[in-house]
Image (cartoon, rainbow, N blue to C red; front, side, top):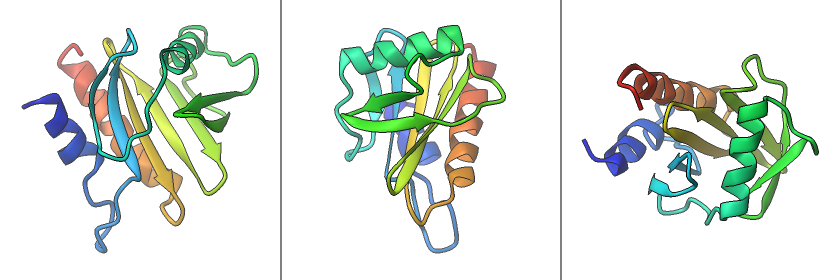
Length: 133
């Protein structure tokens, strides 16, 4: 399966019976390179991906926030701060899971529930870890 298929079939899949999906999603390598993304995923800069990797490596955020494509997200509490980041912005938020080689990123907008985004991002993250990615 191509990396794009993982985004299309696992992250941008319908979340409910009405066919609601995440706003956008991507797989990003630890080096900051985008492996695959949905068409609406914002352009993430090298600085933004580096900051995310630093946050995940240390399990802390000096500022309590981060950006993706210029959108500022406030860090929410995480039970596993070295592998998961949850962010909130006006009208939505995001879930990020770190695997051995990638960041699995899902971005949602209201009325989607954060738990729906977390669920699909975590499921793909767990699968990629199980196959050594």
